[in-house]
Image (cartoon, rainbow, N blue to C red; front, side, top):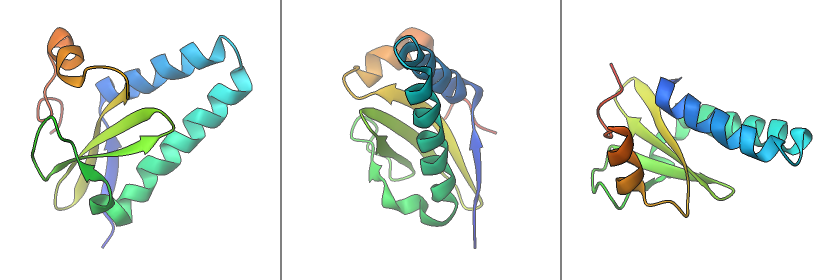
Length: 109
């Protein structure tokens, strides 16, 4: 059974910010990056458990895939996968989300 995949507003904003940054140098590369990221997210409909558990949260329902140097962070539920963050791998995830008032369970239905 396929799950539905839904981007939270915060995660979509993260992706847009990354794409805008990349587009300063190459709009073509930024568009390809967004396509690759969306394809990775779509793949979770059938393969949600393939990503690793996010070490900062130690919760088996919070997982991540790497898209180039970015972490696509998602929450797995029975019928849904929520994309909850899209963060550069060099960033301190806890500090970044704390500064923004985010949590792994905070922006999903």
